[in-house]
Length: 373
Ligand SMILES: Nc1ccn([C@@H]2O[C@H](COP(=O)(O)OP(=O)(O)OP(=O)(O)O)[C@@H](O)[C@H]2O)c(=O)n1
Ligand SMILES: C[C@](O)(CO)[C@H](O)COP(=O)(O)O
Image (cartoon, rainbow, N blue to C red):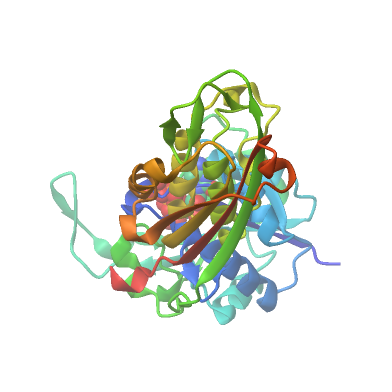
């Protein structure tokens, strides 16, 4: 049994990264960065547990990808750390930013080999530029650039974080609480991804695979003799609508499932539960927008979609171009990459009897190629 737990902090919002994709979700070959980092630690050392702090919006999706221990993060790095620490029972804890994606195996082993030599083992790099602080040039030999991972005595870190103050790393909290910190030489590969340009500093990050990811979606709604009818984001002239929790746009619902299917991100019910009052009567165009933003955040690009609406009634020929335009603008792709087809079922089955509409959709995605920015 190991006496060491690993905490990876991955609940940040990537606001300084300046791209639609969150840095934790950049694809490294076929894996999101957070998973690539967690697995590289797992391969190098033995941990009692690997805890990943992730944001409320990301956590359920991360759980779909792997079975590490996931903990909801807080509003700040320290808040996320505090939440993760509640799960730690081992004597020592190693904490790192997920954004330090290329920490080498040798460096990690060197940090761990210092276990017990101080309440916090802290890697640092020296400074080679001239440093001016508050208008005065200071002695740069006394300046340290502090990195992670940092190895702490769990009890010392838990006690240090009872202080009110917000600290930017573990060692500062421990020192402020009267504890000791031991500096060891860091490494350039432990550079933190903060801005896009940081990606160029990290040779361990291989480009995303150019696989095409395909997904299908299927949905059915029965007619209701009242209400408005929406299909493919367009209002259809009709004196009846659909029975549904939302606005009943069965075409958009099938499309959302196709997109989520291609991304391996579950289904529409997982994102918008049909027992949640927040989505009562919801405009499905807005739900699609949320899904598109999420796909971009998680490192996907939409290639094309194809939607087949099976309906005996209403007739849809006159609406197909408007549906294509409406959906292409929400999806952020050209209209020729959004195909809408309508068909009847030759009067067979529930669709043929005019009881409702069924839709099948297909979507293709690829990974966002961050090497081309
Ligand atoms: N509430 C937060 C904020 C940050 N972090 C994590 O702390 C590390 C260092 O934070 P930073 O690099 O600043 O990441 P972000 O907060 O995502 O970036 P930004 O400040 O640009 O939004 C990152 O691995 C980040 O995911 C966290 O777990 N919880
Ligand atoms: C912990 C850290 O990486 C040490 O250098 C750094 O303080 C994190 O700062 P951020 O602003 O939360 O990225």
